[in-house]
Image (cartoon, rainbow, N blue to C red):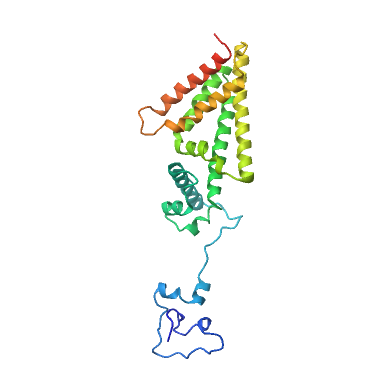
Length: 260
């Protein structure tokens, strides 16, 4: 009895499907002349061995515009799913389905689900660092510089609120060296913000009533709380909220140092 799917495209019986020690049957006109439906071909071990695997991108593969666009699309969908479900509950299958590709094809662009999370943090840290550098380049008094930074800092959170929620909530899911790298970047970011606060304290010249480092921690808590309550469909515009938070941050620092 012939087994389905054990015929080559020329109509001849595949020797790979012939039991050991038994010669293949000769071709006859009654034999199928086509390999049959794809579902049948999966029964043939030889066909399964010949099925092409998902291509892997070489490490030095050029970053073509098309590949870059696809990578950005995957990145954006991952942010949306991580934000909606949380990193732990999200799956690669969901991301692939949302993007419209097979799960295996997704690995042409990423290494793992954690790789996507790392990219979210790396890009955010890079943008934060650039924001601080631009702030220090401003020719402004220290207090005004702190106010400008606080406004733009909060505005970044509000305009990227989904990514900000992932940044605030899901960093604990990073592992090993990746987690240590992110923790180091956060410490560096906190140090740079502390420098802005210290410069404002020195400019005012008053004796601090509160440790400036505690003031920084208080400010970080306020800004990191934005993703917990802000919604894009709310009544407050991002610019309005950012301006208000900037005034509150500067007011907190000035009050902490006892400025008039």
